Length: 435
Image (cartoon, rainbow, N blue to C red):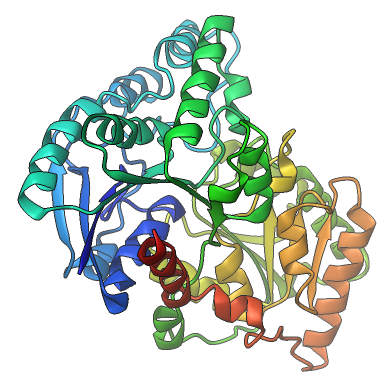
């Protein structure tokens, strides 16, 4: 049985969508004749923004090794928020004008911690990985980022010990959209791109999350296109099937996940406002939020939609997030506005699609996310200035629900079946076995 060492910073009980890709890969790889061994950071030392203890049950049968670390982000969080977790950046960097601590922190993070502020973990991880490789006779090393500094561990082992190495890019590296919010010297930007290119050139196989991301990565170096593969993030069909839900008397519009200032959420607000203007009683509608939603954004919704019932669930477990999704009449996504917006796919896209419920997405209409949603009947992707189109779509879903004509997407489509976590693990196993 081929043994695979998965080196990942994010691992249960870390919460959020970033942890789930490799948690589920590891959970199912043994069904395809592979033995996963995981190396990660102990939650006692990690800079995790959220904790979801329920995820531990998904990985209880996997051999996991955890190390200590030193985490500058905890210091940053304490200085900027007074809390060791609350101020850890996720999806955006604080941008308060006149805040000297934030200014200095953005410079240190952007120009001194290259490629990222979690790179100090590499010291501890490399030491432990040497021990694991020796004791377990590892056949393949697999690194996943962000944090992309994790890939430097794989690069080092390939160079020193000649081990096969696969690098997984869940997000862009030098093109990561919130890099523009950092204070970066030319030298820092150059070093970041140089490290990225070395990883792309030296890894035996590059894995990523979609065909647009594959195109982006392939354009960064010569002759690497053939070794770049993609496997979509997925949904857990087992979990979906066991979660019970029921519709309420409200028309439930739900947003699940991360929402930042970089997202076109104001178009979302204007779309709901336009929908309500057309004689729709506020009392029949409920707007749900679950995940990391800044207070400032929630206040914008409340101020602009004063008569609407808005329910913020906070950060919830993965299981509860799916229950909310399945109970909704309409699911909404807001993808950040960036130069690389065509590559963006929300971590919740596969789960949204697997519910069968209608989906409204604000984002790049020519992006990969739009392409995926277009494979289903009751979905709509709109640009931020297409508020009238969004209002029309919401009306369509609302009118059908009032007539008791529930509009559901086909969850048996080939694309959705291919994105079940079991099937994505099969795709990964096939790549590893052919390696």
